[in-house]
Length: 149
Image (cartoon, rainbow, N blue to C red; front, side, top):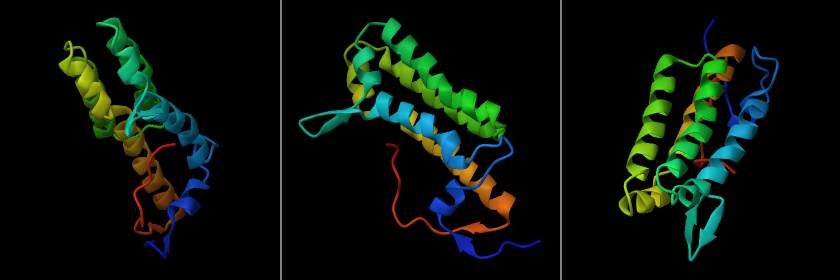
């Protein structure tokens, strides 16, 4: 069975997955968490999230955001996404926590490295691909890059 006409991401968000939930339902909490951790606040045009704030607490702050960011990994594992997605998520989290733990430089790094948004986009991409495959359609080219939140 070949792929049929292209459909938009909005249509694919409504597809019900094997879990019984729609793609949109699966992504809702993860999108909110990524926004909170990476871009919830803005000062003088610079967006930042709780990751950068909590990261100011030496070692413990980065450990907390590492564990909190594990929600993307838990979602990826629960939905049985490919192993390379799990690996990328872990690498993003370890990079964020490892470099974020360096005094001063790590705090600046936390302002600009958006590991949680990147992890959200990884999960989103693979769920949309799964929905397209499940329905036998192909994804329409995205007209604009969507950001969480």
